Length: 74
Image 1 (cartoon, rainbow, N blue to C red):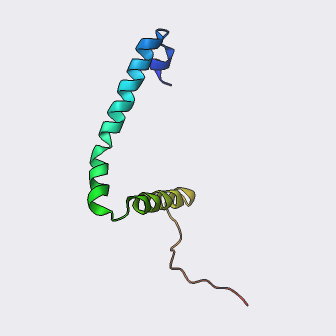
Image 2 (tube, rainbow, N blue to C red):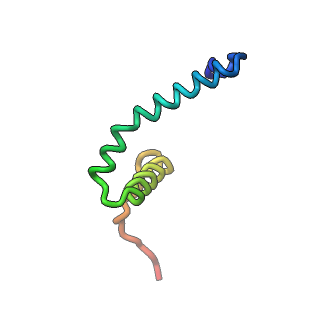
């Protein structure tokens, strides 16, 4: 629950929300620098990081190895 959303003065509330999101964006600036230095292709770097994080979330932090042998019975 966020008390900012209970403020009836709309211009004040919007200003507080804007400052909050501006501060949040500023906190991500060091990550932009890391991406610029580490990634040859920014899109694939961010996509792969997202997919890795998503896979970990799906398997509760213990995803199966992508190099595990497939034991198919043919």
